[in-house]
Figure 1 (tube, helix red, strand yellow):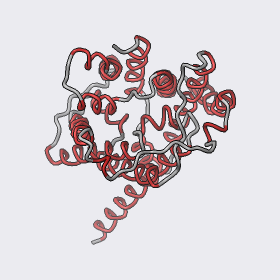
Figure 2 (figure 1 turned 180 degrees about the vertical axis):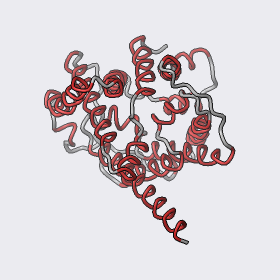
Figure 3 (figure 1 turned 90 degrees about the vertical axis):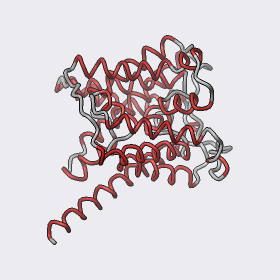
Figure 4 (figure 1 turned 45 degrees about the vertical axis):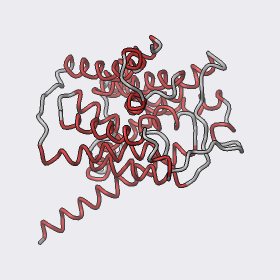
Length: 311
């Protein structure tokens, strides 16, 4: 059975996701098509609060919190980030964004979850491990190992305070939701780094479903229930039946995102809420590769549309 705190944190995280602009695809699209970086700044605020929370819990409970290991920077991080970005662009939503959209009633993103689950079931057979190397922890001090937890706290204090200042100035519910995404995400990863809803798919695919195995994934269930409750109470729930033409994009995008997360290792949720807040080089590299890939595909799509309009 999962710890009660992680269930509460999962529910808070789900509720905040529905009210925040924390989808990497949407934030990148806003920059590429509108020239506005405010949603990407919002993601930096999320990472800042996750870093402060992770460091604070580590300082308060020394020896209990597991800081992320910094893996040897190899092709895994870049290739995984590219595949993750490709899948997110095809799906039109990242891990976190897809869950938020599904909770808002966009049932097409349920197919994204099916694609993620299908990939996890295949990955659980060991097929993928035969040609994809495991991430290897660094033997020399990486960013996370060379920096003390106190310094880690200080580094992320600035973006977190900036987020709090912006909320104080604007009293924006969206900014407050971003702060809660960072706090709840940092809290749940602090003592349960293996947690993620994609990880839940993977673990469930490795064992026969039972009451004990399902109860162990209570944080992921709480995440979904919290998101649904938040969407309904905020009057953001609008049931939309999936269009059959979009089904392959959701299924394929979810599948690619799961594969990319396995290569890195970690999806954009793990990168945003644990790996980058823990100052890992591979986390920063993979997330940057994801954003660059999404931006490149959006620009290519935009250029293709312009050429068609001129034809």
